[in-house]
Amino acid sequence: MSGITRYIYDYLEPNYDAAGYVVFILVFILSAIVFKLGFAKELPLIKNIIIYTFLFLGCIVLTFLALFLPMIEGLIVAALILIIYKTRLWREKREERQANS
Image (cartoon, rainbow, N blue to C red; front, side, top):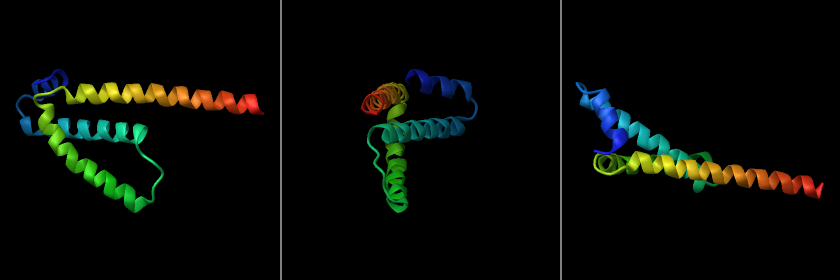
């Protein structure tokens, strides 16, 4: 197991079902953050529901991969990179608006 997944399973050792759910929820939340920061566009509510439903189903596969690969760690790194990118983009747009005013 990878680092964070191993820690979760060790911390919740007698209850492996709960550890699996925690890993799944963590993978889903991080995947949703990465999707929202990197790929999401403004869509109607029903389309967002469909997208996040398929993201939920895809995270089932990612949870199985998280047992052997560092999926959670990779999603954390991707989220941090996208947060830095969005912050710099927001700051540059704000400075550009101030320069044009």
